[in-house]
Length: 78
Image 1 (cartoon, rainbow, N blue to C red):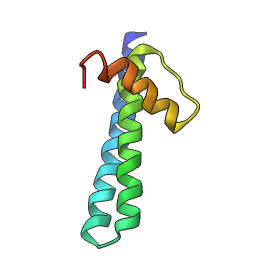
Image 2 (image 1 turned 120 degrees about the vertical axis):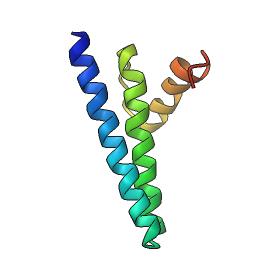
Image 3 (image 1 turned 180 degrees about the vertical axis):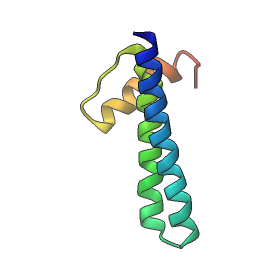
Image 4 (image 1 turned 90 degrees about the vertical axis):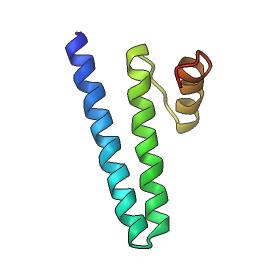
């Protein structure tokens, strides 16, 4: 089970890295709107990865932010 969780976290972080690389390319090309969107989704996927060990599931972006705060920010992990 732990290896499945580790693989799922790695997959989510890989996706976040790809989104961030895409954001950097968009930024370099002067496409600020797409750069912003892709950077946001890089953070979104990284936040999901950070919550996976807690088995937390959210239904909204606002819920994701709230759970990230509860489980990672307030305890001092981030």
